Image (cartoon, rainbow, N blue to C red; front, side, top):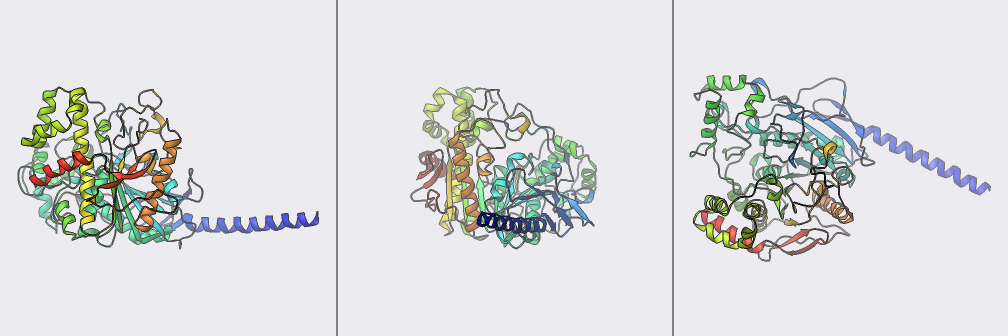
Length: 539
């Protein structure tokens, strides 16, 4: 009996020491010093051992004279701030609640350059890999704070996750001769990309205090965010800031729009935009008038959107040319797309006629339109709309992802290409309080639709969405493991995970992410080979 009592006392003593040790570490990591001040974090609601810091300003508010300028350093403050709520989203139009991509009535502001940190570190000396997330939304919508982007479950795998806002629409991407004239770099536009680069500078300066390793920073993004990380990978301004890239459903490879050349130039679009606001001229007076206009009016005025530009500074040349030359940021890549991207993006589109499909093909492919149609004839015969959706998916996201993987592989760096074919349930991705879109409990009606992989990547099936099954949960855990392993080692492979081969363009073997994850020849190889030949012929 005495022996049992002694063992019990020893166990209680050990638990007391362990608890004391854990609490001391938790206290150390929960209050963090940054360049601008001290932030107090909170425990994650979704993963034990993870500390969350929300609403940290990484730059000064880009307002008044700082509107349409590169981000300035964050404003220092005294004392300790509680970092327990996300900052305002950048200005954007509200979209319909009937949309799969509905975001609700967001708090929006020009003072929006905030980020959130999810740290799996138990001590500031842990030096964990860092993953920096840039959201999608066409560079016109979205923010880093939705529940679907909660980084707790990724951080719990031994990482530090950062999710950031960046300027959007006209406030983030307006190019104009007056802006270029005042720039010391003879550049304008791409302010949203400069914000993302500022996030990376903030990470370099501060992330060690959150238990992260500034020498192991992976950027990952989806849709417009996937395109943006592609541009960052090719930007000289990112040298030394990034050590790995994950591009989810990117579309950057074909970017060829320039600041000054042609009717499609950034300057031409900016002047046309200003004229809609009754502002003319290319000098300082025009710029003063633009900076005086209310942000909501600027966002509501069409003509700029979220278009990135080859501006000669942030983006010196086309992404294709820069990746092909290997001139910038020789780092590993993980990239891919979904089987039916545009079935989600065009889910509210009415059926079209065959003539309308032909007109679309003529616009996109010119004299090759008939050959493209033949490759999708069976689908076109049953639904011209579905054919347009699939052609747009293949020629956009899937081709861009494969081209990017090929260019990185051919310059001698490691690329890992995936094809996501799991058909997730349909739900409002960003509105957990109104998840069910059709009142059908999350039926799988759009195939592997655009953004359908997000909850899987963040391993957040337990906190967002509906209608998940055991196969979904297993795939989610696997994908989160792959993503964190890539951030840790520049390679998604790890013990216990299905082998993911390095991409070889000659074999076109990719990782097929589904209920039965496996390596195999790209399921869209025939179509992508044709579309790639057409693209290269037009370059």
